[in-house]
Length: 629
Image (cartoon, rainbow, N blue to C red):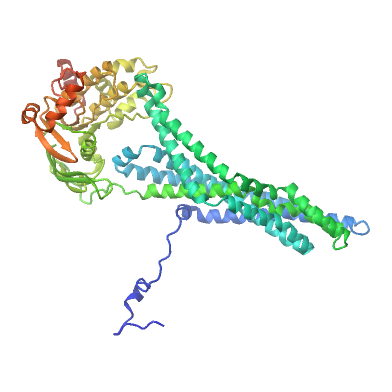
C-alpha cells in the first residue's frame, strides 16, 4: 500500500481520479462506436432479433433430424409422436422469418437516420472549413467522405452486422445440439472450422495496413475522377484531350497493381481456407468417420443423420467470414476518415463581431505556416488602398498564392494581422466578409445548375435583367444565348463550357456580387488567344473602381499597376511601380528580362484591368448602376 503525503485531507491525486498515480487513462472509443452512438439502441435490438432468427432457423433442421431418427429407429413411429416435431419446425421457421425481417427493417431504418444525420453534419462542418483546405486537398476527400464512406457505413450497419450475428449464432446452437447426440463426431465436425480459422488468419496477416492502403488508393481514384471530370473541358480547349485522363488512369492502374499484389499474396491461404469449410468437404470428412462409427457399433445410423444435416453449418461461418471482415475493416476505415474530417478545425467565428469601416486593406507583420513549423510567409507588411491595383510577382514557390489567399480568408495568419476597413478579418463574420471581398481564380468551379443560378451564386435575389447585364459585361452573353435553353440551360449535364467560357462566367458572377475588394489570380492562364481577349475585356469591367490584389505570372499585364510587390521566399524584397523597379535593377528587373528573353509576350503590354477600353468602361458603369442596392 502506497504511503500518503503528510498533512490533512486527501492526496492531491484523489480528486483527479488518480491522474498522477501512473494510472493509464482509458483509450478513446473507436470512431465507429462514436458515429453509431445515436442509433446504438436500435442496432442492439436489431442484433437481438437477428440472433433469435438465427437460432430459430436451426430448430427446423433439428426437428427434421429427430423425425428421421424416430422413423429409422425401431418400429415405425406413430403420427401422434411426429406431429409435435412438425409443428415445432413450422413455428420456428415462422419465428425466424418474422424476426429476421424485423431485424433487417429496424437496422435499415436506423442506418437511414444515421446516414441523414452524418451527411447533415458533414455538410455543416465542411461549410465552416477554411476554403484553403478544400482548395488544397480538392473535392476528392469531401466526395469520399460524404458518398463513399457513408455508403461503406451503410453496408456495415444495415447488412454486415446482421450477417455476422447470423453466421456466429447459428453454429453455436448447432454444435451444442450435435454434442448431445455424439460428442466424438461433434469434435470431428469442428476440425474443418479450426483448419479454416488457421488458414484464414494466415491469409489476413497484415490486413490492417493493406486496408489502410486500399482506402488511400480509393481516395486517390476519387480525387483524380473529380479532377478529370472538372478539367477535361480545359484540356480539350487546347487540343490535349488525351492528357485529361492521365492522372485518373495512373490512379486506377496503381490501384489495380496494388490489389493484384494483395490477392496474389493471400490467394493460396484464402483458397485453402474456403475449400476446407466447403459443405461437400465437411460432409466427406463427417461421412467417412461416421460410417466407421456405425460399422463399429459406436453409434447408429439414425444418430449419424443430424451430423449429415447440420454438420456443414458448424464450419459455415468461415466460408463467408472473409468478405464480412473486409466490410468491417472498410467500415472502420470509413469511420476514421469521416471522424477525421469532422474533427478538422473550422474557421473560428468571432466572439465580438466587427464590421469594416471602408475598404482599406492592411497587412502588418504577417507570417503564415501550413504545418506550424516552416513559414511560407514571413513578416509581410502591405497596404491596399481603395481603388488601386496591387500586383504580386515572384518566382514559383515565393508565396504569391498563399499571400493572396489570406485576404478572402482561405487561411488565418499564423502571426500578425490582416485588416479590412480597420477590422481584423478574424473578427468579421463570414457573410459580411464575402460581401466585401471577392475572388476570381484560375480553377473555376461551376455548379450543376442553370447558367443564371451559377451567375447568381453571390446574389440569389438578383433579377434576370441584372444577370444579363453582368453577362454582357463579362463578354459571355452571346455564348449563353447559343446554349439550348439560354440562361436556363443546366450546366454539368450534356452542356459544358470551355475553360475560357467558364472563366468569363465566373467573372460575371463576381460582377453581380459587386464586392469592392477583389483577389484576382491569373485568369487567362488556361485560355486560348481568342478567349483571352474576351477575358481581358471582362476583367476590365470587373476591375473598374475596385481594389485589386492580382497574382501576376506575365509581368507585361501589370506594367501600369499602382504597386508591384516582389516576393521571394515568403518575404517582400521590392515594391513600387514598374518603371521605378526597372530603374532599381533588382529582382524585378531580372524577372522582367527573363520573360523578355523567353519570347514576345502574347499581350500588347497594356494591363487592361487598369486601361480599359471605352466599351468596357461603359459596361462597368452599367453594371454598377444596375447592381446598386
